[in-house]
Length: 142
Image 1: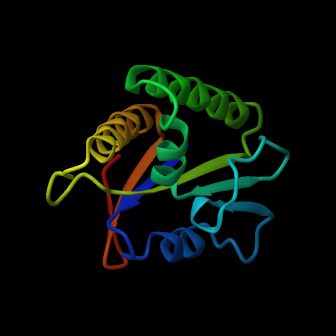
Image 2 (image 1 turned 90 degrees about the vertical axis):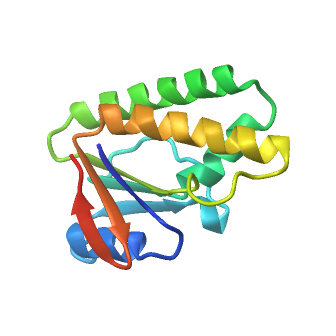
């Protein structure tokens, strides 16, 4: 699993497309920004999930923070199992960093920010590779 993060509009998606040469490979690109649902895992060689913070917000709206985190940890375990079943498979997760800047005034926005931070920590812990993209330039963290 490869996690790519960084600020909004900093070139994460373009970097992933170039890094994996996605024009030449069979892949599935799913974007929360376009209203896509998290797909069922399939036989694609590469699955890209873009907009994790949006899906996290949707998942956290009706349950407590701890339950949201546990549900997302279970989803991460399923993704890792899918990826491990075939060496050609790769899951690429793209999520914007929403932890910087002013702390939101609305309680639900603060909870979303907290859950997103916790989930990103869980993803980073489980990922094989982690990159931060700022202004189109990558910095490999793991």
